[in-house]
Amino acid sequence: MRPSFRTACSLLFGLSLMLTVASLQAASPIFTPAAPSVAASSYFLMDFNSSRVLAEKDPDKRVAPASLTKIMTVYVVFRELKAGHLTLDEKVTISQNAWETGGSKMFVEVNKQVAVEDLLQGVVIQSGNDASVALAEHVAGSEQTFATMMNEQASRLGMANSHFENATGLPSPNHYSSARDLALLAQAVIKEFPEYYRWDSQKEFTFNGITQQNRNLLLWRDPSVDGLKTGFTDDAGYCMVASAKREDMRLISVVMGTASPNARSNESQSLLNYGFRFFETHRLYEGNKALSEARVRKGVTSKLPVGLAEDLYVTAPRKHFSELKAESQTDKAIVAPLNKGDTVGSLVVSLAGETVVSKPLVALEAIAEGGLFRRLYDAAIGLLEKE
Image 1 (cartoon, one colour):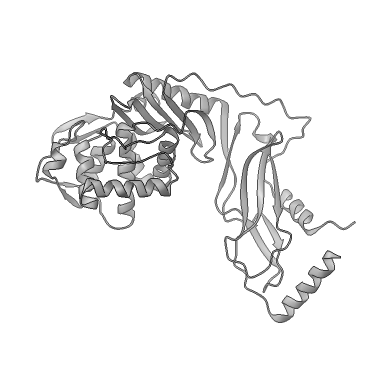
Image 2 (cartoon, one colour):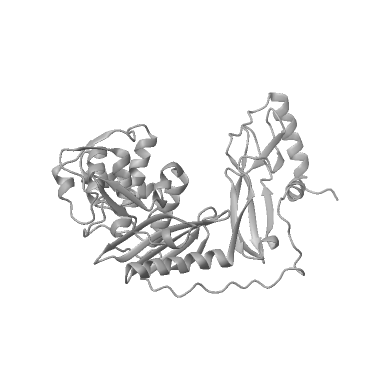
């Protein structure tokens, strides 16, 4: 019996797999210890590359984010820099309003001009509320308008439980975020702006003759930690977004509502250690690289390279990575014209019968519609295959 095209394509794809699939008889029982007890009102731990959630408690609970707000503040400014609307050496005139902002300070002075780069470091390293307001006013004209920009980005990133009313995180009735949302935001900052993320690991910054240390205590305790931000208000408690990279694996942790500066560091460290100890992440496939070849009907060519739109990273319990199983399926009838990026099938990676991740397979090339003879020929072949 002749195998169907779908079966043949699946077999061809299977031959191209880069991971070793162990037999069910060789697979060992999968056991992953529960996450440690974390003394926080909510928390969240995820892998940076695969986005797999490794531990969570009330991750969507809306809470006061305190100075974790400033991760969004600098993200908006980073996007303005990328768009060419700002430059790092551009001068910002400090307003009376910015200078008067309470809480942690960079100690800018009224009417003085300060470079955007210095203000960004004042926000990231020193958690300066005055610097945050100065940047917001410079970018948007007012902090209120800047908050609108913050909310636009929150919506774009899928931060469903966040709303910002200011650039600082100072208490405001309708200003909130969640542990999951802040992890998504941290992921975006690290992925999109690695050239600026380096400031998050800087232990101190001196401005106006005043040296202040980064409040992230893990920068001194754990060399794998390189960001991101701490926060505190009476409403929020002590909170922290942290990220660490060990070998090729990066994790992001968020703890909200802990009891002290030391507690937020300890709880963050506990989550990170748990993730690195019991899980591993690897890139299985490279994006925009052909993984198989599919048949196309009624096109200028009958062959279509198929692959993933972006790199595929998978996180699995340690010592079980070789037991992953990848299966692909392409659409039965792929008909031209096709645009590059059109979905033509799916790839499912599973472990012990449970789906770990599912991704669409896409066309890696555009294929135009063929001539009349090609269309008629393929139509006839299609009718014969149905019989």
